[in-house]
Image 1 (cartoon, rainbow, N blue to C red):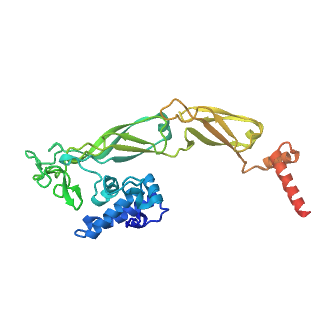
Image 2: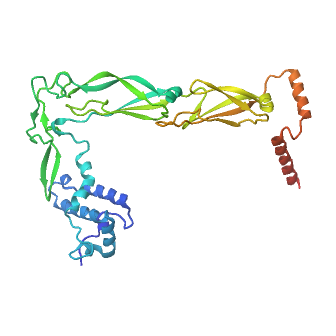
Image 3: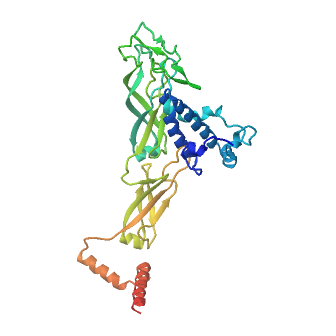
Length: 375
């Protein structure tokens, strides 16, 4: 009978734990018992091996199923699970915490060449500019390659020297119990080279800050939040490394007349009570700086919408066009003269249910409602 500790107990999780819980617990325990953090502690080394072995089994769906059914026997000699062991699987499990332990993200290339940082530029444009597109000129402060040292970082007439600690590799290896660790060289910080005489123009960085003028092409149909990438226009890389990218983030200024919804445009137009009752027409502007007529049929109600086809915004990178929607708002007259008030009062007397069917029907329902409550 196996004397091994239960894998779930080893990882301090319930048997029902999902993948995220397993990984979280593994990372926490592996960081705690890692031999590098417990030098000379044989117990931590053994515990670390147990944690890794348990995680290697439980993170694999098939191995976990076999373990749940047969226990440790599934991975012993001749067992249905084969042999989980502490072998090739260690590398995949250890990679889950390697970056946390040693900060291997963002590795440098040989010679200390690092890719430059990406930059962001916020640009506000008008709705008309989004409709027709434009070419914009921008000026941004950006790091560029130092001309004095050609991006090397060393003073003119000198060159960087190979790091004596790592031999130019940028990394050093160290044996730790049953495995070998590789980490960033502490002498050159992973660059592989040392600069003894730094360039006075860039202080050894290989780049300086300059103002740069760029031309940005904004295609028709861009929306609020559109991102435009200019490859290689970001900061210069350190010591001759490749440059980063520049990202232009577009925002649309509020328009005095139109509201945008995707490729469609919406606007509200007030009309008089007479125009709504008798019918008529009016002109509205269009986004391409033209105008179009809207015909209002007799008896038009407030909030009615009229669709004008293909008068909206262009769809980005296509030949399609959105529509324009005009919503009319019937305006109630104010500051009436005595004569106007008398005429409206006379109109009210002459009105019947045929002239205002919606309000007549509503108040009939209200009357019936209160009548039913009284009964």
